[in-house]
Length: 452
Ligand SMILES: NC(=O)C1=CN([C@@H]2O[C@H](COP(=O)(O)OP(=O)(O)OC[C@H]3O[C@@H](n4cnc5c(N)ncnc54)[C@H](O)[C@@H]3O)[C@@H](O)[C@H]2O)C=CC1
Ligand SMILES: N[C@@H](CC=O)C(=O)O
Ligand code: NA
Image (cartoon, rainbow, N blue to C red; front, side, top):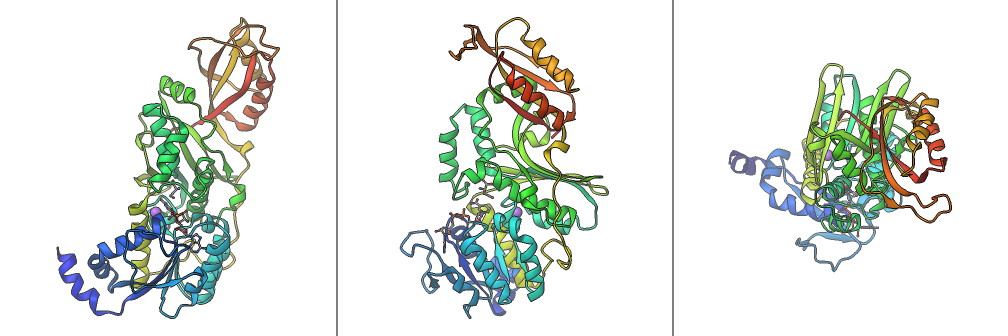
């Protein structure tokens, strides 16, 4: 109550912060609704009203459920960067290149603060944009770019600024988590659940960005850059998505006491930094295994702070608009933090370590002919590469093997193996040989195991 009454009086007196919004899709339209619906609260917290003076979107006629009368329309989004009635440019188009990049660059060059939700842009061009923002002395803010409504950027860059962070990551893509949760809980097909995630506004314009792990990798690269004090070269992040996850793996994971989650993992090691995105088995009792649906989890570990986990909605109109508006409030109040939490002067990128350097426990699922000696053949290869087994599971109905010439009429069965911690280079060599065994049908599935 105090917020609205007292705040209205204080916030309404000062000159408004005038914003221009490029892109009126899920997030853009959500931002208009939030700024209108919470106008008084926002003005009180910002110390002045936040007014939408201009927008740029492709289709003037589309009904977005918001009233834009009196707001200037630009057909060319880049024109927002120099519109004299715009104090802050809000980029909600998306994409690392094209209009979004031109708009942000032009605005920063013109000395205009920018707020963006564009993780692709920050992950790929964040180093040069930080240098540009620092040169022209304006803020470049991107809280919405990582984990939607979770204040992940603020937490890592500001809340934990004093600590030496050793690990950051978590569940960073709402669409994938939504899909895998629905597949696990109701056995619904991948394509149906993906269409639902798109209809709910969770997915990227090209949803392969979500399901192939690229979106989570953009967010991980940003978090790792903030946690370790230098931007991570995006091309060096190891990325795998969820297309290879079979319903069988979800069932076997359950039987073994795990759930499967698409995780982003960045770790500081003595010899460098690991940054990777891939599905992981996590113990079903671990906190991260409970994070389902569109929810994300951001996990951080530091020498002094220990471990913390933030959970919240990682995608969708409301949560993402909240994060964009929080950045606008910071700008209205005059608070600004360097993009990577420190001066961009002389800041060079870190190359993440290659996958051969990873060291994990592994889940392997093979489809094998149901014949005597199969297990001995497979375990002999693992032994040759120094990979030791923790457990093995073989059950389910034997299916007739495909007529591939080598089948010899034997039925096929899934065989699941769980290893002790081992080097990924050894695992990959062993897997290559296992896949070539005549008793193995098709391509084996390999999923890493994380303690969660
Ligand atoms: N949807 C979500 O839950 C979240 C999205 N984001 C990010 O927010 C940004 C926007 O995402 P959404 O709103 O979901 O996308 P969207 O596809 O719903 O909206 C993008 C809008 O930009 C417009 N647009 C495209 N090209 C344009 C151009 N040349 N000029 C003007 N407008 C143009 C499109 O017509 C569309 O309305 C992206 O960077 C996305 O990665 C970040 C966090 C969550
Ligand atoms: N497509 C993204 C949207 C938020 O960043 C996701 O599903 O997480
Ligand atoms: Na966020």
